[in-house]
Image (tube, rainbow, N blue to C red; front, side, top):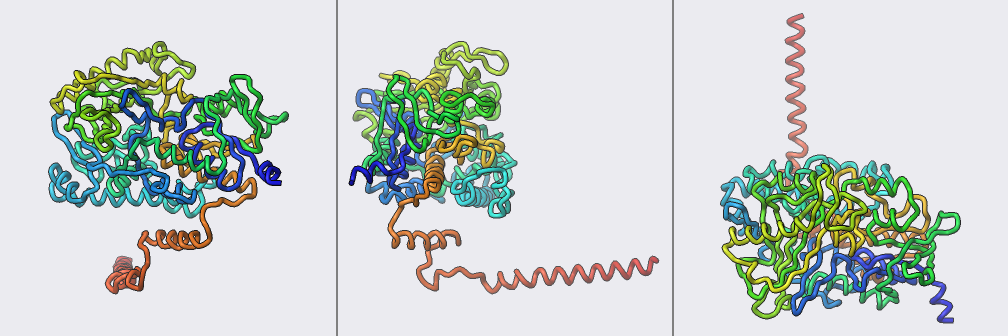
Length: 588
C-alpha cells in the first residue's frame, strides 16, 4: 500500500543542479512530488560550485551574498532556516574598497558615518544629502521590484499593463541608465563610477543597464554584503540536503542529449541520455540548463530557438584563482579596481566583445573573512575580469572565434594580457607584488564557461537585462507550445543572480503545482497566519505593529497641507482668472 502511494505521486524531472534547479526540486518534493534531478557534472551548484587546490578554496562563481531576505524566504518556505541548515553568514565590512588609477580609494560601507565621511571627502556637505536622495531612489527601486517583478510572473505583454505594475513603471526608471540616474545625485565623475560599477553583476554596462538596477546599490548599502563560511556553495549544499530529506533523487555525471517529447511533439515526457542508457520519463520536466542552450540543443529546432542566439547576452569573464603563499592585508575581502577610461572599458566589453586595454576588475579574498579558505599565513584570491562573450555560437576553441568586426577573439592572448595587466595595476595602486607569491593558478575563460556549464556564448549571466530582455520580453517560465515543460535559471524570468533565480524557483514551483492542482507546502497554519500579518504590515513600510504607538498617521500639519494648500492654490487661480477676464472685457 505504501509503495502504491509513493508511486502515485506526480513525477518531475529537473534538469541541472544549479541554484534554480536544486531550489525547485526541494520545493516540489516538499509539496509531494516525486522528483529526480539530473546533472551533467559530478557536483552541484553549477557556477556556484567550489574549486579546491591543496588546502586552498575558491568560489568558482558568486562570492558574495546579496538580497539576504530572498535567501531567508526560500529556506523559510521549506520549513527551515539558513542557520538550522548549518549555513553561517558573516557580514563583510567594509563592503568594498574601490581603487582608482590616481591612487585614491573609496570605502563603501553600511555604516552611515563612514559613508558620510567618504562622500563629503569628494562632494562636500551637500554631497551627503544627495547621497541620501540616491539611496531613497534605489530603495524605491528595490521595494517595487521585489513586490511587482520578482514575485510576479509575466505571461504576456498584457501582464505589463496590469494597473498594479503600470502605475509604478515610471518610478522604476527603466528607460534611463544607471549612470544617468546616478549623475542626477552625484556631481563628480568619481562618485558616479563608485555608485554604478555594480551593474557588472548583471553582466551589463552602467551606461546601458536600466536605472531600476540601482536596487543593487541599495541592498549592499542598507542590507550589507554577506559571505557563507565554507564558501557560497554552502547555500546550494543546504538546498540539496533539504531535497534529499524530502526524497529528491540526484543523478550526477548524467549529461542528457535531449528533452523527450510525446509522439505528437506537444508534451514533454522525460529526458534522453548521452551515454545511451534508457530514457527517464516523468509527468513534467523543469529545465535549469542554460535556456538558450536548452532551446537549441535539447529541443527540436525552431525560429524562436534561433532568435535566442541573436538576443543580447551578458558579458563573460576571464577569472583567475590564485593560491598565494603569503597574506596581503592591503586587500580586503572585496576589492574593485576601476579603469581610468571607464566608459571606454565597458564599450570594449559590450560593443567590441574584447578585453579592454585598461580593464576594471574585481578581486575577492575569501580568506579575509573565512580563514578556512587558505592555509595559515596564506591567501586565496579570485580575480574576475569582465570580457566580451564568444561571438561565434559554435566556437569551443580558445583561438579562432571572430568578434563583430571580424577580429579574432584570441583568449590565450587575452589571458596573458589580463594576467600581466592585473598584476601591474595591483602593484601600482597598492604597492604590493602579488605575482611573486602565486604558487598555483586555475583559470576560467568564455570557452571554459561554455564547455563546463553549457553557457550560450560563454555568457556568465545569461541573456542581457536590457529593457526588451526583461519582464514580458524575457523568455517565459513555461514553454509556449510544449506542455509540461518549464524553465528556471538566469535567462528565464525574473532574471540572473542567485537571489533572483531563487525567486524564479518559487514562481516556477507554484506554476507547476497549480498545473498539478497541488498546494505548496510551506508552513503550518499558525505560521502562515503570522507571516500573512507580517507581510500586510510590510506593505505599510515594513514597520511591525506592536501597540497603538506604532500606528502610522499623518501629523496635523501634513493634513492641513494636504487639504488647504490645494484649496489656497485653487482660490488664487480663480482670482487670477477673474482678473484676466476683467482685463479682457476692458480690451474688448
